[in-house]
Amino acid sequence: MVKGFNDDSLPWLLELDAENPGVRYFTLRNLLDRSEDDPEVREARAAIMTTGPVPAILDAQHPDGYWVKPGSGYAPKYRGTVWQIILLAELGLVLSEVEGADPSDERARRGCEYLLNHGIAANGAFSAYKKPVPSGSIHCLNGNLLHALLRLGCADDPRVQTALDWQARATTGEGIQYLKSGTSGPGFACSANQGQPCGWGAIKAMKALIAVPLDLRTPTVQRAIKVGAEFLLSRDPAVAYYPYTERVSSTWFKFGFPLSYWSDVLETAAVLVELGYGDDPRLDNALQLILSKQDAQGRWKLENTLNGKVWADIEQKGKPSKWVTLRALRILKRVAQVEVRNAQDVSI
Image (tube, rainbow, N blue to C red; front, side):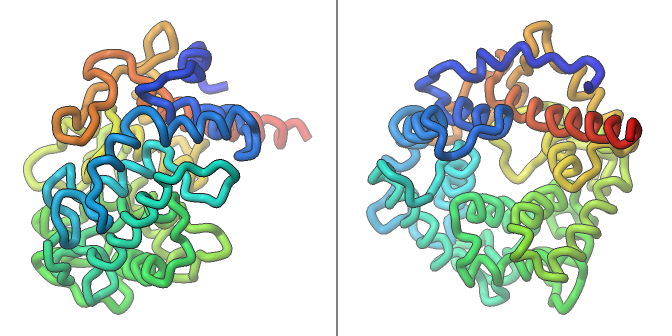
């Protein structure tokens, strides 16, 4: 097993928790491999809609489907439409036709539809400007929203497919008109990073592309995933020395939940493990950094937070965090599975 791995926190993550019901749901699904039809999973999924931050977010929604003000939804940060769609997916909302589905699911669907109708520019990508124009299209925004929409059941929507195609081609450089005010070149180059490839943008883009169901991955998406993996592994993820404007951001090394346009070493490792690099020695330092932050009870602290900026605060900064612990254990579980599989292959 992963050296230093301690899963003593599992009972803590499985507690009934009215403030963080999504943790129990994801623990059952991702760490214990329970199915969506499992009675405890169904109960945990239902709790997400009735307690904690999801109802607070949905209660703040305008009847037309947007949050705060109409438009593409990027502003105001982090209470506008864009951020709510991202948060609803991260918090465990499931938009599926299941028996006993909460009526508030319809509000979430309305939010997705509003975003798809008002947030996409003429190039097929999401835009950060109130009036969506191509110059507002950047990797982190598209990656975050596509990942969220895929998790919220919109994979078959033609608008999502078009935005995915833009994301893939913006990564590989195939047939994209680059604008200095937005995504300014292939390989995750971004105007917000003075035209240099952005590590945060790369991770968000890869999160989206690897969330695409295998049967929906086009050759362009597959090529973009390869480009993304090569870029992320071109630096030591534990150091995060990706091209930058002035210095490496300390945010890389402060684990938090939820994340915004920024990323951290946990998210980097999660993407690379999902890409099949769980046993790659280039990931070793990142895994050791993750393990070094685990306490004696197998928990990780909340070191970075959006509290005070979102509709409902999530946990307390500086205290053990169920969400960060869940994020870490997902990675370590996958790595441990790879180690077991490799050992079995050797013994054959």
